[in-house]
Length: 84
Image (tube, rainbow, N blue to C red):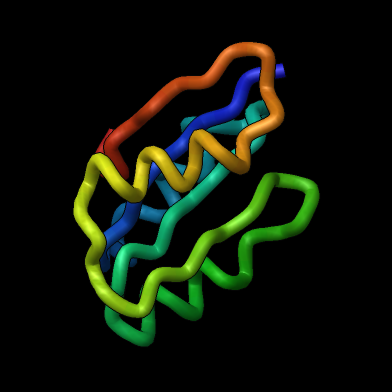
């Protein structure tokens, strides 16, 4: 299985394309202090696609990736930016 770890800081307009581009992989999305609209959209990720980690504030890109890595279950772990 492939796990994709991606921090989001806002970027609601990127989410639909991101989900389409990553079909078939476990998603570990880190909401890194996003605005309410993005936070709500991320929170609605279907459980069969993966999980969302919510940070109330932006803890930084590297720290968010480390959070996602700790929660991933795939044999292969890929770190992607949200604007792929």
